[in-house]
Image (tube, rainbow, N blue to C red; front, top):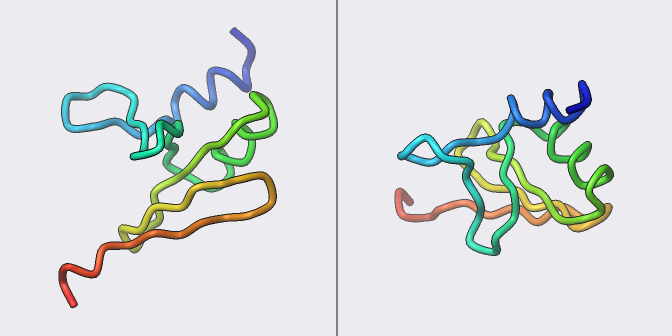
Length: 73
C-alpha cells in the first residue's frame, strides 16, 4: 500500500458502525476536500466529503455538488 493510499484510508469517513461510509449514490466519503480530490484523481471516479457545516459535497470531476439538510429551518 502506498503512502497516498494509507492517507486516503485514514481520511475515510466512517458510519455509525465504524465501517467506511458511502453516500446515497455509493460514492466514497472522506473527512476533507483534499482527500476527496486525491481519491477522485487516483481512482478516476467520484468521491465526496462532509463539510464542517454538516453538508455533504460530491465531486464529479471539476464540479462539486453540495447537499445540506433543511430540517432545522
